[in-house]
Structure formats: structure tokens, C-alpha cells
Amino acid sequence: MITKVEQYKKEDIKSALMAMYDLAEKAEDCILSLQTAFIYNKTTPLKGCREVIENIKREGVELTKKLTDIVSDNTSIKCYVSVPGHLLIIGEHLEKIADLVEEKIRGNILFSDKAEKEAMFLLQRLGEVLWTASSLILARNTFLGMYIEEAISNLVKMADEYATLHEERLIEGLCLPVASSMYVNMLEAIKSIAWHIKEIARHLTASQ
Image 1: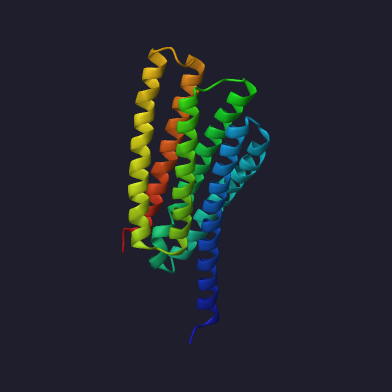
Image 2 (image 1 turned 60 degrees about the horizontal axis):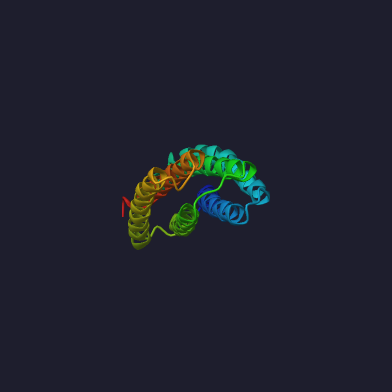
């Protein structure tokens, strides 16, 4: 027979898992907003993205504290304790990208066609992997974890290849230095987000 205390603890765990799932989904929504702003050269979609980021920052800290308290009574969910922290840092890097996109739009800074397509592709892939990570939070499936690890590896490899191609374009004078710096910073932020998604997957599947 389940006692009331045990039932409350189960509800706390369920609530924490759903909250982490929601944060991951919101981060994915933020990536979609970044893509929209980038495509249409409008800052309006960034407002919603920034609201999401503030929400991630606020709830990420609260969730870490809540999970730490729960773990003292239930060590089976210890693997989740680091997840809000990773989501928090993902939010910070999303904010960096939002700042760069806004700077690009307000400064009317032009990327080469190649750079625009590359950035959009990486953001799209990042959103897809983050969506899978949100599913992994609710269902700690080894195959989902393996997919995320492989997808992240491919994404980072492509980002590195894009950086090399970009250097060649810069040498050839096909892009402006200010656009170059902005693009490289976007690539680094995308790679950092990818790394933290991979860490979430690693923690959630390590004990399986």
C-alpha cells in the first residue's frame, strides 16, 4: 500500500520531470523563433524567444533545488539533477544567438548566401535534436540516447566544416569581417548548445 507521503513524492518527481520536459520544448520553440527572425530579417520573433530564455533561467535554478531535495529520498532519479543546469546554459547560449541575430538585423549586416543556408540548417538540426532530448527526459530510452549522440557528433562535424569553408570565403573576400565574426560566434554557440544536449543524454542513459 502506497502511503500519502510516498504518493506526494511520486507527484513531486512527476512534476519535476514534466517541468524539465517543458523547458526543453520551450528551448526548441526559441530556436524556431530564431529561425523565423533570421529568415524574415525581423526582430519581432526574438521577443518571444527572450521570454522563453528568462523562463528557462528562472525555472532551471528552482528545478535544480527541487531535484536535489527529492534525490535525498529517491536516488533513482539522481541522473536528472544536472539536467536543469544544462538547460540553463543552453538558454544562455540561445540568448547569445538571439543577440547576434538582433545585431545582424538592426545593423543590416549581410551574410553570404552560403552562410545563411548553413546557419539555418544547423539551427534546424539543433531544434530536432533538442526535441528528441525532451522526449528522452520522459522516457529514458537507450536508443534515443544513441541517436542524440550520433546526431550531435554529425552536427558538430558539419559546424566545423562550415567554419573551414567560411575561412576560405573570408580569404577570398566574399564576406565582410563584421559578418564573419558574427557567423563564427553563432557557430560556437550552436556547438555549445549541442554539447549540453549530448551531456543531458549521457547522464540520462549512463546507468542503463
